[in-house]
Image (tube, rainbow, N blue to C red; front, side, top):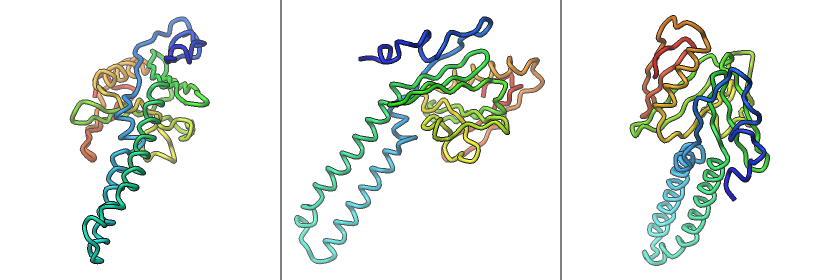
Length: 224
């Protein structure tokens, strides 16, 4: 059964209701499950963890005088555990990506996500204080939306579509996009249109852990 059958009740895919008059749909997309597996479910870190455990196990056995064959004989169980854990994490990433739809309209950000209890997050553009674009060298990345205080989005409601390490003031996110540049441009244009006449191009590039981040303020008229 495909995603359209699972959400056949939606009048427009990814949206809980038809858009009001005057509001238009600008863009829709979904996370790439492979990127989501790496970024949200940390499959690489889990793989490294099991590799370190295996190396320690072999090193401990050999330092104790056991032959190499005996040291390696116990690794099959560890290998099965690692394969099972990685398969589960990749499966969850695929399921979340399959049931997630990101929507950008002329008035709001909409994120439909969830497995057992799918829900829809509606964030008016008027409540977006800044949008932060994270780019990777291969063109992938995401766009996170900081909500104006005292408004707040619950982190557990937004996850995994939330900016990492933002627990006190969570930021919903178009996450794990295979090509973030066109989306960043459309978000910048939508925020600029929502804010009214363009006053300045507020782009704040920065470097962090191999990613380039740029802040898009609501009055920004240029793509990050």
